[in-house]
Image 1 (cartoon, rainbow, N blue to C red):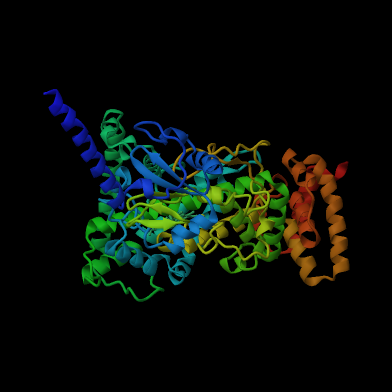
Image 2: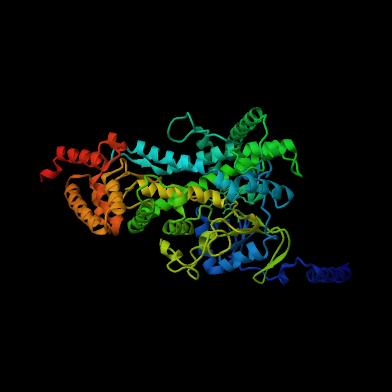
Length: 606
Ligand code: HEM
């Protein structure tokens, strides 16, 4: 017996060893022979999940400083490649774009969009190609976005009105964050659904907005089951599934109602080829469904999933950009002043900014870029997944690897950007760097096949709204404005942006009227005298008007017409100007009106 085991045990061990070696040499999947990207040490079961923190873009940036621009993490059981440099991003989203064009399946978004029948979460393939091209052609193309210009102009005008209403006195506080969310929701509602769904509801967050907010929140919540499959039960126990099911049901009912309304209403035909028609996205999708023009079945679930995408991908992101941009401008008064000077100079005597004016506002465009660089709304883009084995920067990446591109870290990479954490729009002067997905050091909208198709749409709304806001208002906010980020997949300011709209150009103030008159009709010398008089009046007025007026005088004041305008603007501080005089046509009437008012207020009696 002993001699038998003495013989068998070494034989079995030897055979196992040979089999192991054989497999090791022949198995192409053998990791030992592969060159894998560096990885931080991981814990059993959770892998590197514990290292993500509430702000994964920041945590991943810190890790990449140690492990390099391509690192492999294990998020639970999901191998995840983290990309943190422009070169590495270019390899993923340009060189190997096709291999990394898939999206991983994630529980909540998958449920929300009827089993990934939308664009953003659809796996790479024919369905995705078809729905994406329908949306781009009929909603998001340059031509189409131009045709919705009137909606952008009306909605941004409405924003200005709402701010005026909410800031009826110099000290009333306006929640700008809420109003910006309404602006983008309403704009997308009108373009995609043909009407607003917040109308008729009380001011503040409407039912529709609350539903969207809940969806965005749920999409950003960490769901353990997505990374550790045997922990799927947790979301049932902690009520997460129930919460998701509830909002999914309400949103589905809402979308079904919208589709039915359109179907009933739309017996007539929609001309798909006419980019000037004002048919909304649902009309167009139903028309394609009816005509069966597409080579794939456009069922109702796909229509609802696509509408869902427009809201989920387009509203929160677009309003967040404005929120951060205004917050940065309020933190940097000199930049705000430069921007206001540009905008007011371009506007000249016109009371309203139009989209045509935006082309002349190069500083505004630089401000927008700088804001997107420091605060990309989706800092980690939308995850991708590889569909075959590949090599990236000399490392072997296996099929099925999830890919996270840290666009936030890339846009703050000191190798690419000087003083990367500073807000400095001037850095974009004479660089040609743009966010359209060709400059990989700056990719707030992603790049390649899966890059954002809504860039023109979003920038159209944001630039116009920003120009109008800084044209009309001198916002004032708390002294140490809190710039903390809120956790989530879209990064907002943690606390809402609260402002008082000091110095609102409520009436066509004396400043604008005299300014226009002076610069257009009179010679420079005369204009200078007017400026001198205005300065004198401002110096007197300054003593008596509200505190925040003082702040205008703290900052450096621009030159020429703008300098002058700043001064007179103060003179026209709303409490001093009769609101009913908003419509006054002539310089004389307005001036006399104001003089009387100032006289009554004893401004000149000092
Ligand atoms: C400032 C506003 C916006 C930002 C920062 C933004 C950002 C992004 C990012 C980072 C992605 C993922 C790109 C990638 O994986 O490479 C994306 C995808 C997408 N965005 Fe946007 N987006 C914005 C506005 C919009 C708007 C207004 C719409 C439509 C109305 C839209 C529709 C989409 C869609 C449908 C996708 C999925 C594309 C695909 O997977 O093929 N986005 N967006």
